[in-house]
Image (cartoon, rainbow, N blue to C red; front, side):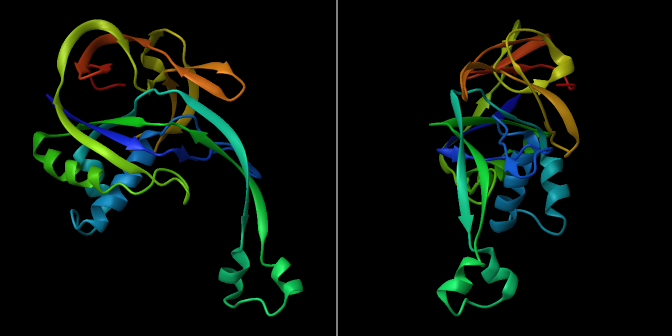
Length: 230
């Protein structure tokens, strides 16, 4: 079985918790739904899909999972001139300018380098997925730009029972330190994920390994569960 592994330089991303409002806390990992959304945008821009690109790209992907990496979260105050867009005109005075700005607190995660595992639904989709991965532009909010350092097509082989270093559905977990995070899966359905990270201090997370209730496949340095329910 062949899989794709994309390596990204971020260095910052912000993917808002679904249940926060005024303070936009970020998820500590890139959820599957965000990876799929980024690939849809890349595929559309690259002319790799037609019509309903979301449905088409979802059909290419079996799994799209974040690989654990050291992560630091911190808040940022963002000040944006939303009024220019809302009013459709520029302010005429300094006093009027003040009303065009608003501010919000948004949390960001710092990761020097991030890898994402993509398991295609069929070998025939690998070529288009590889091209789309090279065209990735951002993962998260408008400031979450990425640089693609490399895309590899790797052969995944069974490596027995063991531990994985990718986010998995919580029901798949047999043991190991992890965070429980509610996020969207590849189809956009909210699910409880076990993310292989442990709190190492205020806002700092270190990678861990998660034992799963199945055999494991290995590809390069990445291990992920066998089967269909992870």
